[in-house]
Image (tube, rainbow over all chains, first blue to last red; front, side):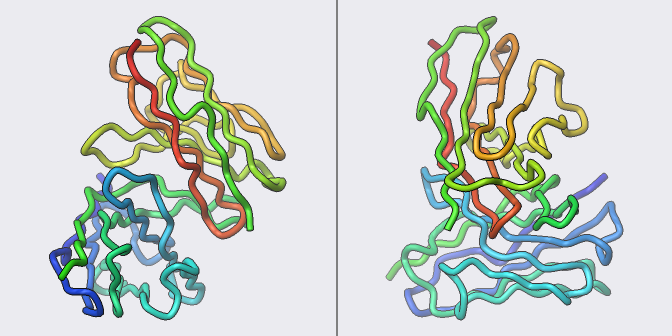
Length: 122
Length: 107
């Protein structure tokens, strides 16, 4: 059974940093791309970043480029999101998701974690 | 930059009725790289459809997707009480993007 468990969320002041983790199990983590998607309170879904299985291909949304960094440790079956220079508008539930490859596309998320809440406030 | 527009914003129907949700892209989505998700309050998004028309594993056949190019549709054949939720379309051809969602509520 595929399981994705996020952790690391919490309350942080504007300008601060936070590192999210996602522990994966139930599939061959090293061969699958992964991504982070966030959802601000009462709002829709926003893609944040994606990373290929080998970490060769990494993409970030323009809204977080230069501030957030996605990474992974295949030996630990873990995905990470390092978030720096946090802003109030980064307040959201952050989901990790496994990405299913589909042709020559970015792929779509099939399994999602339960999410971890990040609140940026003074 | 591609934009996805879902309509209507809110759809009020009764159980047993048919629901038709629309997702329009501002530019052509190649190879039907479009998915649909269902999200209930306090829950994780659930994949319904990928490739515009392929149902994900375990999804009932009352859910169907269609369309290509810039116009896509999610149809729910006969609404069950558990189908009332928010539905998002998601294009993964270009830099990934979700539509703003359609809320399907009980009339």
